[in-house]
Image 1: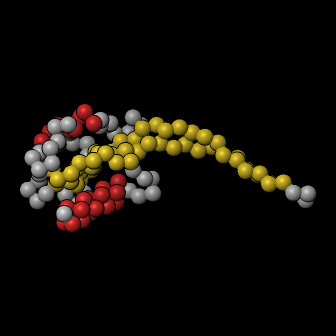
Image 2 (image 1 turned 120 degrees about the vertical axis):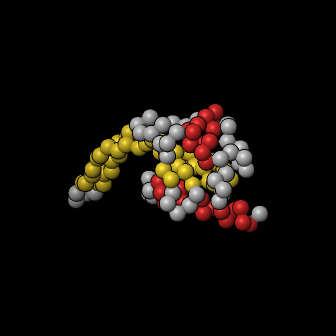
Image 3 (image 1 turned 135 degrees about the vertical axis):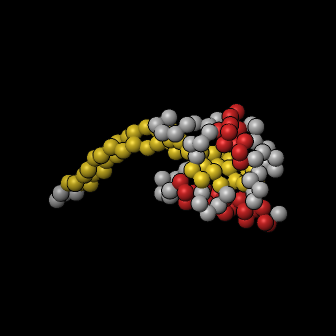
Length: 122
């Protein structure tokens, strides 16, 4: 990984919603998480190398020609989100592909809010 500790599906098989506590999650997955200050959600995030590329454009006309070229890189930013109830018991856990357009905090809180809405609607 470029940053963070990669978590794999086999690493989280011990998590059982409604049974596993926050303390057990932290004990097994470690303390390299981001805790939401507003939601009962932990985010374990990591970044993997993606790749690089080149883009270009050009325009030709009888009167002028213009163009540009540049390179770019992308990465694969991932996370494992875990939501808890008021007693600190897991309610939901999910692997998530993160967007570079929002912070980790924003994305974990959006996820937590969606989980809460889903739980209330059932």
